[in-house]
Image 1 (cartoon, rainbow, N blue to C red):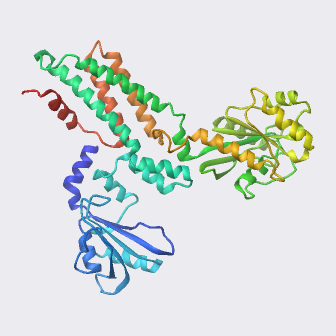
Image 2 (image 1 turned 90 degrees about the vertical axis):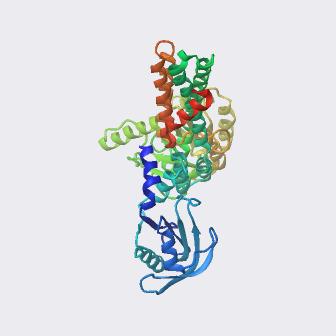
Image 3 (image 1 turned 135 degrees about the horizontal axis):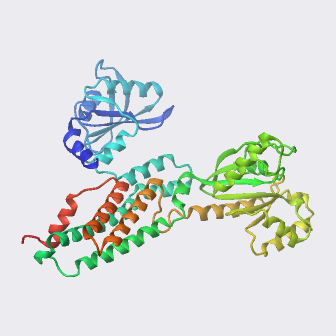
Length: 474
């Protein structure tokens, strides 16, 4: 498919439509950017902003007119990007105009009257950039993530991916696999003619084994990048009237959930997105966990338990006034409520005497088997700062530092293709001694799986390596 796309680009995009669109956001603003890309870009610029093209990549102030009526629509900056030095690799133009809706509409309508132009479809500029080889698929996805980033950590991760760091890892692995496949196929085709050096297959064995280990290590990332991209799923759970809805409202700083002294007020899942220290979190308030004869509440409890099973982190909220007075008995009481990846929140601490609060805080910290325990009052916000520090640390552990170490997987499709790649390399190991042709097919399948991540797969590169490395026919 990609080869066909490349051929279409090289032989067919020269005759393709010229597309245009508003590239800045809709609504009133000081400046709006209208982008044009395609073979008629220069025609559009000449017909709307003067017959002389400005120097490449130089902003000039021009009167922008309607090509049919000659009426002036606005005065703004125009920029000319001749191919291939543009985002799409095609001739491109940008109009920087005033951001009023009437001005934007008039300029877009004027562009539509230029022969050979049409409004762009969603993502069409980026698709043309990919087809021109300006971006690989990981960089395209990074660009999309950067546009949709809502937190600082998401921005950092997306920027790394858009700059090509993740794609560079996969391209490096692809290059090594191509070399291995070239060596294996050369051995199959030419070993009987004694044109292949000794040790070629042993070198391929070591390379495949090393690559498989690297990819498996890359996959053991505990989904940190995917969590950061989509948000850490944090579920607030606990018994009725423990203060779960109050905690949700405190964290999102608005009355997102109904708070009532009546037990069992929350029946369904209440979700809200929040930014915790620059990391995206999807908070879910759930029904109180208890036995009930009410069918509606039973369904709410079932959904709550299901959501806890799916959570990345559970905030287990316990009413501090319900704890046994003895610390060891209190620790045992809390242990019964524990879940995987759990943070204990002892709410309503303002109702405890000061001496009991301090005793709980000191002695529960030393109890083995208990996760982090936070004393908190959603009524007075006492202990909120310490709780947020612990929560942020937990969320950061789940997501990792987006600037530290090698970039991590951010898409489920990356993971699926890499798992297919590992399975294919295992095929090489399985058939290496019994059927070298089937073993080579495993390497070929692995290479295809890697190529599907970046969107670049080519057979000619393998042939180039064969002739370069072995000088066959010399």
